[in-house]
Amino acid sequence: MRTIQDFAALRFEARAPVGPAGDIVDAVSAGVNFLGEELEASFHEIERRVADRTAELAKATRELSRRAHHDELTGLPNRTVFWDRLSHRLDLADRREIGFAVLFLDLDGFKTVNDTWGHGAGDQLLVHVARRIRRQLRSGDTAARLGGDEFVILLDAVATREAALVIAHRLNEALRAPYEIGTHRHVTTSSVGVAMGVGNLPTADAMVAAADAAMYDAKRRGRGLCVLYDEDRHGRAPCAEADAAGG
Image (tube, rainbow, N blue to C red):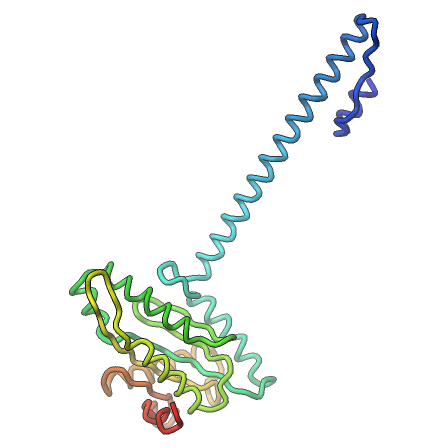
């Protein structure tokens, strides 16, 4: 009985004494010991299955979290993550001396790729664009895909509007290089709007809307331009400013 109680307490190393006589008591003791071995094996099997299931659930949780926070096609952070990080950066604005900026980027002529080569080719182009954008980011910057061919970028630390335009111009140049899309070779440009984290842009929505307005101004001017949002002039500073600043 003491041995069975030990088994119940998960002390599987316990064993009932088996004497040399081989009487009924010894037979029962041997049976109890065999039961203990079976219980130990079953217990370890249950532990293994629980560990495997826990690992599967943890992996599934990580995958759900990734999908909830990242764009499925490009792997970039999604709208929710970007808004959270931009809102947090706005909260820190009064405590950090250096400025920050939002870039709103839209590919020029993306519809032509879908219409000419199909949506699969368009998806490939977006994946390549996302990779090039990611390579241009600095530590602390965040790029996200809003949908379609629209991307937003948070420049976490830029001292001046000229510095922001230099980065926007460099990004534009990186996206101009030809893309290999299946058997096709494609060259595209992008229009970029830049909004600085100063002035009357107190919310994430306001900053993105300002950068979006500047981007549309760049679209109206032509292809492959960068425009800085200005509250009075509503974005009248093309990438030439960045070139003048040494970009």
